[in-house]
Length: 467
Image 1 (spheres, rainbow, N blue to C red):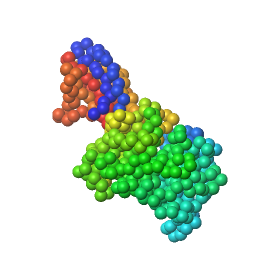
Image 2: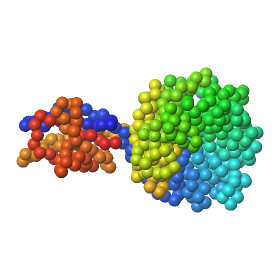
Image 3: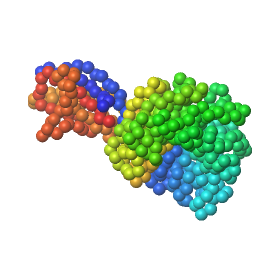
Image 4: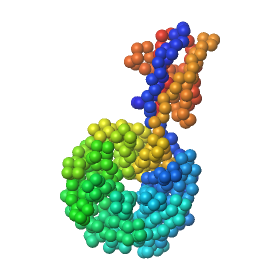
């Protein structure tokens, strides 16, 4: 357990021994109202140049086909645009802010074939910061269907993305979108070279596009591909179950220049079967020459079924979410648990930062984004009955304020973070720490900033910020 602590020596003459704060991740959830833009968000957030956060919801709005919302840093939410089916429906991707200051994105369903809350192959749209929505393109199946990965704006100023289905074989496409709405289908997958590209792609220095497909390849468990500027596609690697199955996060370039991602299933924990595939998911690294290395496998205790975008921190570590796993078990349909937030270093050291418990959120699926304030932001589709937005910050260690002695009692006070719980421990040798039992042998914990104990001699005390 990671702890934040200060150490005190309580002797007949009270004196401060040392202060040694160690940061601990604390989940601070910003709940959102249900029934409008704030419901069931499966897409990541993006921070605009104005400092506000922008996102989309799969449901909500007057037609219950999705919305686009803005959230201020203090959690105030405004619905900016509504989908009605003809202009798009059910977005599953995050937005990006283009170089012109407008926001661009896609909807999974909707468009010209949308009738009676059904149908439609999806749309591409532009939205001004004040919410004016313009449909730039409607897919028709032949040129692609159901865009499921976020757009990127490449060095040439155009936008690039993928559709999960459609194209010449019906198994997905890679496309280019001009700012005037002109769409060019660059490549159609056929199964052998991949199928169902449904996550984030990235453009590297060689101007090639790199990405992953959810299915396809020799085992039909997904591939990693490179699309060169001349339109030729190379399958760099494929998944076979042992090294992962069904990429769930798309790719992100690390500070070392390599590409990183996750798979929803597969890995070494074969005792767990999820969607018919052994394994609870993996984290992997792939180089531009196709060398694939599995960095870590999930085991449900540290998370299961990693999905959504990874975020690159200033320290070079990557953070992400799992939609299942962790403790306690609080929903049905997954291996166990409500999901986690994790961090992994480029050498494969995996750290579980926090587990969702149903009260602070459940099933994060949109992934994470690193904001200008240095905190991580993400969305959950469950928070009680509804979804929400959360912020994850490295909470400061409790800072010692005072020690006082009166009438044979000793009182400690420290700084606190609202809503967090603290534990008071003691030791005599700095090796074995024990919880202070202040009353009836009940372990001591509190959300307040002080504790009073009886007189003691030659003991060292610490206050621990509980996860």
